[in-house]
Image (cartoon, rainbow, N blue to C red; front, side, top):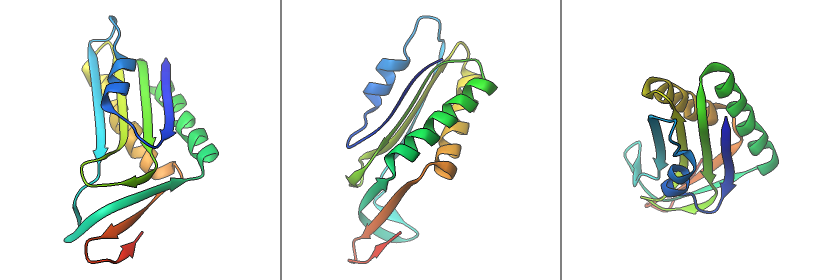
Length: 134
């Protein structure tokens, strides 16, 4: 399985799509997590993402290893943005390519769910009313 795993200021769907395309892959699933302009009834002005990068990358590679153990995946992309992100900005991209779509859907869902549970990337929320929360 080929992987592209990165944490950087800006992530794009195109980068992930370019990486996963392969003639042997008939199923490509891409998940993007974008910043919403609201949460729990409050307006969101921006989010700030930070991480302990070495640990975060290590955990992302562990997720990729688990994906490889469980599914016949050809390519996997895990990209996460850090820094200030505004409503509409992409914060995370997961892309999976396999021969068949069912496997790609399952692996993509597992990857984003596990990333949110295990990878030390934290966000701070800046609300439109001026308050700041975690």
